[in-house]
Amino acid sequence: MSVDPQLPIWFEASGVLITVAIMGLAIVALITLVKTSDLTGIQRLVWVSAIIFLPVVGPILWLTTRGILRRLNPAGQSGETTPGGA
Image 1 (cartoon, rainbow, N blue to C red):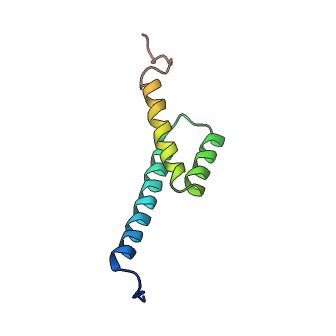
Image 2: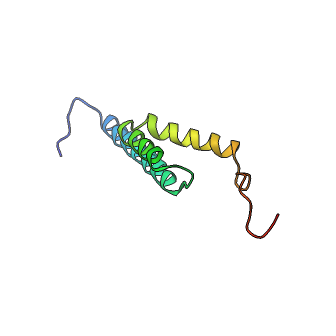
Image 3: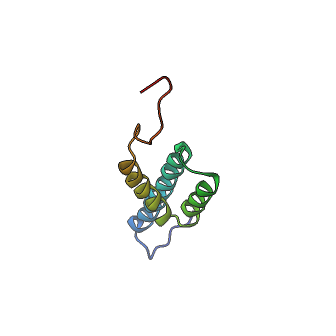
């Protein structure tokens, strides 16, 4: 690996850190997407495409949308009845 003498080392290191942060954000978004069970196949495909092809905007949109949807429809209030009664 050659180091460009015109660029300071912190500049290259910050580029690496930003890249790792973007990849980490995408990985977290993909993991939460896989764990979500209330999406159809087409919806899941669209979100995976957005996360992969829009590396910053896609994961942020997914995580934000997921949070909003979870607040609007908390667990246990989906309208489904529990087996065996009430």
